[in-house]
Image (cartoon, rainbow, N blue to C red; front, side, top):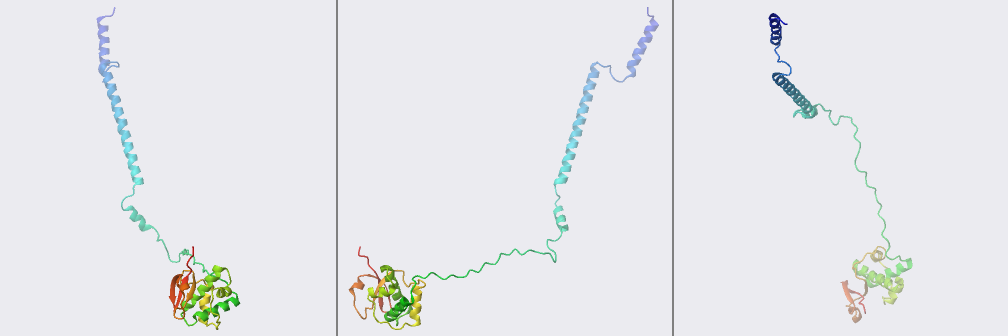
Length: 227
């Protein structure tokens, strides 16, 4: 059997072992609490480390992508000038518009030389002493009569009973005929066909037509429709 001295020595060794360690024995309640506290401290440390890393990365991003207020001005100051002496600048002005040659207007009624001579002489006989517009009005009547009846002007002056006098035309009469037959110019838009001088004759027929204008003592009429 174990002696009392041996038991006392064993108990003394066990008690010394427990006293030599500052940590509680594994499996005890105190040891469990200690482990939980250590895990909590490690988690808190990791969380703090992660938060510090995030803040550090955010500060770096702001430093990279954010330009300080004075940076643009400083950058502008060091940029080279946009133009320098001797720099070639291409000519970007619009090209000059092409010159368009004016085209002659289409002839209203192409007269032969013989027809022109007849019209000019008739206009001279009817309105040689009147204004240029009065001469054009007579030429208009001859032109409208020729187009309406489908005949040439030399026939129209016969059908519409123009004077048989054929004096030599002046240059102004020639110009009036050219203005009407060649360039299609008119004094009035109405298709005048008839005219007479009320100071020389009376005419119920003319007055039964549509009066348009009076020029140089002549009254001009458009035809009244019989429909």
